[in-house]
Length: 204
Length: 204
Image 1 (cartoon, chains in turn cyan, orange):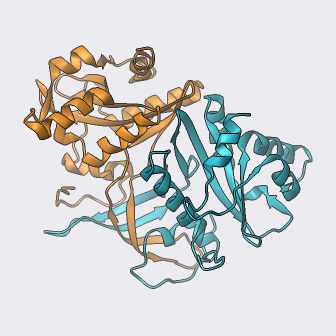
Image 2: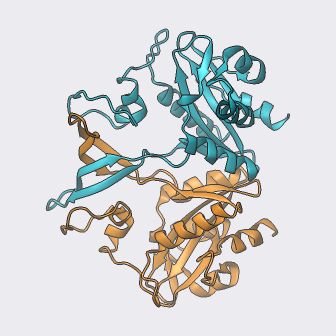
Image 3: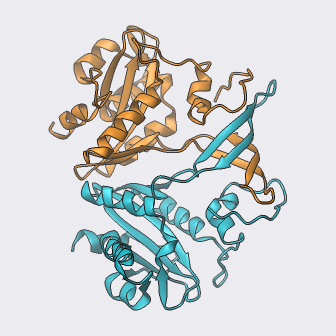
């Protein structure tokens, strides 16, 4: 994990310290008047799905290795030394109409292809295990330059992922994502109606 | 969340700082020659299920609110101030034979009943949402004095949970757990074969 070595003011919220953001030099995606990170957009969409009784999907907390904790008198325990650790799974999972749902959200500035290095090997292997158990797995891929979001089935991702180790390309052409994936236009509520793409995966 | 206000030596592992343990004054359950915490026992069981391709179930990371992060030159980011925050879901979820699995593990020293205060309202509500979506939810309940572990269906838990607000008792009698739940005897591998109980829930 690459951490950009810059200092942020104290007192910032938790989600803004997510390592994924640090990797992107704390850039917030801005499109139109929204100015929300992709993570925040997905969390809002999940909150909508939950409130409407449509699906139960949550982001997993960022894994942390804790080294030192102080226990001040009459106040809450304070973690004084801890490190970001590597997740062994994807960031999002849950249940929708009896189906196990599991996905990770990835952004790219690339206009013509999605670089496979955005996924980590353990995330891909985790999705492979989940697919074997009958889970619905996918990447939620955002092309930030054009504000386009796709649900891209894990099984299609696996083909490209495996091929890169046998002389294949290190990215998925955007036109393949457009053909084989499901484009998810932004909406008012939910902001990212990604279950529309999941419905298509389920009914394939 | 009650935090015991004692100091631990530095350099201790992550799992030992889990708030659940802090609540129990850092007690490790010791039975026979095992001396493992229930969390560790479940993690080992999940690792076995994963390695054998039987199920994919993971413990979610402990949620933390991060306030301050240092970025030392040429080394990893260090979290310098953070707090344990309340989980909005249960601790464990995953996928098994196409089923969404969701549960929390709870221990009691009580010999005759399981006190409902071991569950938090948001955990019960989360399981209710998951059950509505067709998920398999349960409590993995351990009576530590007798080393007995049960898979107890969330729907049975809901009955007692709701009744406590209408004059009902604040605990579930152990004999009810023994009658309506599924006793899971310790085994060598997996240590806690809780999917045996899940199989019974699925086939009800």
